[in-house]
Image 1: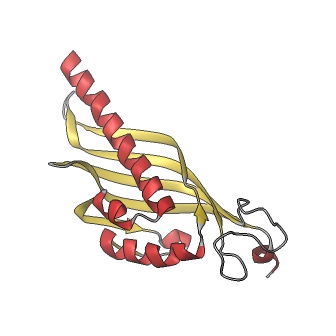
Image 2: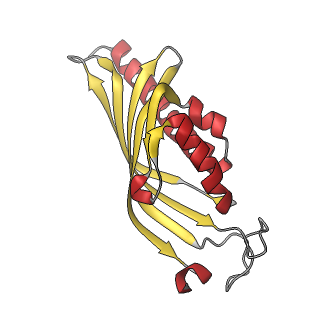
Length: 168
């Protein structure tokens, strides 16, 4: 491998990492246009193992925009990223796969519909009452606009409820 190929591979890895981070930030901040812009035009998302839907990114973004209204406080933590770039005989190709673990603490809207998250047994506005974890499987493609998500599948492995959620 030449230095030019090595540099290109490092740049690809940094660009892909920025896409994965952008995905988490878009969901956490409710920026659904930004979410959709991270996908290829035919990109798809599959949230079925987490109780969601599967479909085109635009359709899933619409579903998320409504579902996430329940959780005014949310924070994706995407860690342990394993990135595999397509290898074309020692040169990077235009495809990549990322497997990454996630933990997602969220707080439901308060009992009176406020966004403070206060209420229930825990009066702290930042304490989560719903936490899930699992693994994402991302498939990415290099496009004329940079790396984009062609598909993402959520593999939820666990969830934990606290406060009023856990009791009924």
